[in-house]
Amino acid sequence: MKNILLPTDFSKNAYNAIEYAVQLFENEDCTFHLLNTFTPVSYSMSTFADGHSSLMLEELTRRTSENRLAKIEEGLIAKFNNPKHTFLRSASFNLLTQEIEAVIKERNIDLVVMGTKGATGAREVFLGTNTMFTIKKVNCPVIGVPEGFTYEKPKKVVFPTEFKFSLKNKNLELVKSICANHEAELNILNISFKKALNKKQEEVKQQFEAFLNDNSYVLHNAEYANLVETIEQFQIQQKINFLVMIKNKPSFFENLLFKPVIKKIVYHTNIPFMVFPSMKLMKS
Image (cartoon, rainbow, N blue to C red; front, side, top):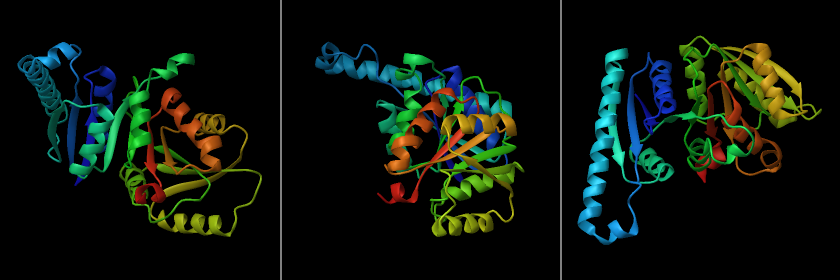
């Protein structure tokens, strides 16, 4: 039974991500945790000074949130009618990322699915930040669904890697199961720096191939030029419709390449993507 967290601000973008999650895991037993966080706009120092008024405002906002969450649940049940799926609702007076962190711990969440918004130029500072903050702060896989993306089964998945990950990472099982359940081809994209794999990387590569023995996969190699452009070109050429990335601890590679990749993917990608933490992050 998977526990999947679905944050929503009641926007079309958020609802689109919710529908994506429900369809992505249509053949699996899942509990979907619908979450809305709220901080009333008029919750000012003046109302704070009046305890009675502030409590009334919070309660009114909570009821509105709970009612809207209930409508979402009713709509999902009516549309998909999946006996494998159950829903739990939560309306919380809190900041989004703080509540997500708390819910992940309290409810043993396996995955967070949320919508992302595109941005151009300076607007990147303001858009997509909820997804970015969530990816940065939580040690849990996060799937981002681009605004307006129409659901399609993940038939071709790309996983850019240097083969510097641990096969003990439980989140690799999630990648494997998504590919298996949708009969997807996993495209393993090794982006090199004009250097052959060292002994350790070669061992990880061989172990990963053994791990994927029952899955359809293809190995690809590309020399590093511009990591984002390389991934984007590969996505177009191979008709990729799902991207997987690992979030690592700060390192030379991450500082120069990986952080910009995640940031740009969150803001600019037109396909769903999943980011999950490395073993080192999960242990920290």
